[in-house]
Image (cartoon, rainbow, N blue to C red; front, side, top):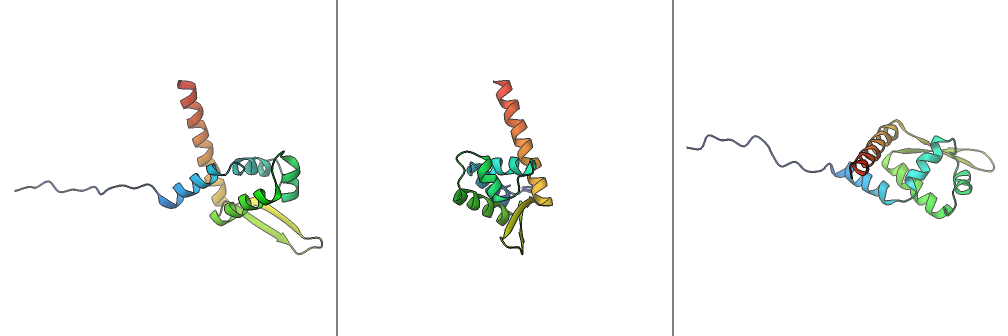
Length: 113
C-alpha cells in the first residue's frame, strides 16, 4: 500500500503580473516614461519634447497601457486648453520597486560575468 500522498501541486507563473512585466519591458519607452515622471515631467507634451525619438502616438500608446495596468493614473483637468497629467499610483510604486529589483539583479549578473 502506497502511503505517500502528494502534498504539492504544480506551481505556475503568476499570469497577470508576468504579462505586465513582459509588456512593460517590451515597450521600449515605459522605463523612460517612469524616469520622466520621477523628474517632474508629467504632461505628455513635456515628455515628447524631453526625449529625442519619442512621438506623441507612441507615447500615448505607452501611457494607455500603463493606465490599463494600474501603474499610472491619468488626471484630466476641465480647462481650456485641456490639461492632462499622469502620476504613478500606489500600485505603480510597488511595481516600480520590483522593476528596480530586476535591474539590480541584472547588474549583479553582469558583474559576475
